[in-house]
Length: 376
Image (cartoon, rainbow, N blue to C red; front, side, top):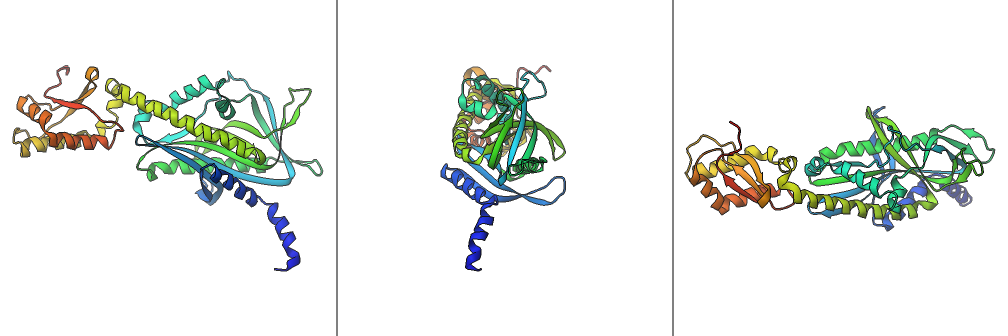
């Protein structure tokens, strides 16, 4: 390398987006986010491997649940161009728009059966006008109906291809990561995804309805639309963020992670409180392990205690909400067997360990013979 070439090479490097990616990663790390740079994903349309600039995440554990806030980030840089977002007043009664859109995934079936997502979106809806941070991330006043790249040197219009590419790369990477979670994640998790396009360039909003100042410089704008990714028509929210504003924007995401974690904690406590009176909650995992539990009890009673002669047991479940108990119905009339089960520390320990693998709180239970509520 020639000494006189170094300034030219450096100038070329600083014109690229790689330096912006580097700085964004440093800001994320400073705020306690873990980062993955240039992670590859499979393009659902072409089948070709592509890369997303940055994936960043924070995680907090509550009970047995890991709460993730995940950022899918594209970085763009230009010294010559501006991105212009054309907006109009948003009709908030439009049934085709979802304003409290929370893009999340969970493998905790208790949260799914609790309708966690819709409840959390309702919380956001109720607080969006009083909570400044929720307002920043979810409230939308103006609807972006078009986007344009403009060259600042000669003020000529370019198409929106670079803007569109930044959106699609983020959404495809997000969908790829989200769809892979069910195969990768074995512990209980909930992920909240945010799509972010960071620009180290001038961002402008053109709002023709504002006759006095139709054009203004902006640092953050939200874009909502339907996109077909992986052959699925889905609603997506994308944050366009000016690089110089990103650290301030990230402080809001720090607070948002804490807010979401606290809301999930409230939901888990509500699940625990209503577990014995909510049919869908207490049966969430019991259906999956019903046969296993039946076999455990059967072998204990027949071969260890030698109390029953049946060829098998089909244990069913009920609850006693008043005393906060789960009821195991043995399905047989045998008071000795019921007494044995209720007093066998060995059997109760085995069942408590089994139930503990699926539930984040201690399950109280007792044994009975026949479910007297059976209609026939």
